[in-house]
Length: 126
Image (cartoon, rainbow, N blue to C red; front, side, top):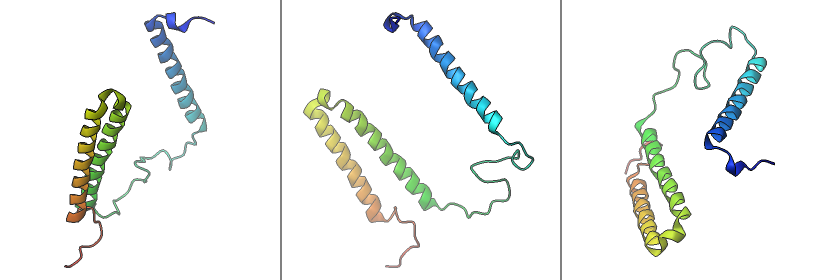
């Protein structure tokens, strides 16, 4: 068996590109063979809905705000995963920084919850 560690990086890149192109060509070829062409199916099709007039009500701002809040807290998870990977190297100062980060984001979540920003139902009278 050849020593792959001694392989020239350009050759490795060329092999990688060739394998990726072969997989792509196989997938596209298989899709072309399995596709059932018809007038109805060849029309515009976007987001899982056939073309036509919009039948849905506009999206309310509360749903958009919840999506933005979700993205903020999703980025928090990505940062914490990165911290977890380097937890041993950063030691106690990293643990303190991660704890402060989590506490601040929990405070932000508590504020959003108390403010009612996460409610999507009808407004209640107080």
